[in-house]
Length: 288
Image (cartoon, rainbow, N blue to C red; front, top):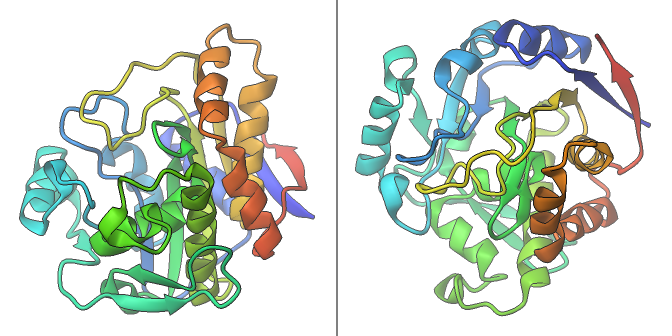
């Protein structure tokens, strides 16, 4: 059974302590996948929060361009955003799809897609640390580790490919929500396979808005911060995050749950579990 570690304390130092509980030593060049934040967004986690864990694993923060324009839609704009948000002051971040062509990862047992397009810069890394800001999402219902592995690691084209269920040209007109959600699980599985066990996950349940960090105009958090999770299993850590929201007695949790359920967000977790790259069952371990 997967282990999921939890702490109520949300500090940069506690992130490192939480990571150490995993007992993992990520090998070689470590890609640290995080969300750089859309310009105008007030909820994303800043570079000073993540700096201690990035330095601890001696990693390189990585991102990919978006598929919808905005302040991260091109490499030029994305680099400007990294500068405005302070990332460039601390790190030489890599935008993994800044130079084509994309790397194609096979998804032979995919429910919707049979290949996944990721930034070819991923080939520079031997392992990955996935840093997720767990919160709602206007399209996926919620965003956590699986979304970081799928949409987050996908190239700009790959993001459209996932959204369109294998048809990037119709990324935003696909009427079948479950097709998109299942395609995310498919894509995530290919990234997990690519790193072959050399991958770890931390999720922070803070600034719990119904909107994503990709929204330039996002709603303010609707409920109080909960804490942080760490695991070697992306499905277990997402399931644990959902469970903590549902178990919360905060009056704002109903609004976040409405966002999750109205988009059928749990379906991504269900599809991921069917693919077998993790489990929805977990052992919950509090380190407080």
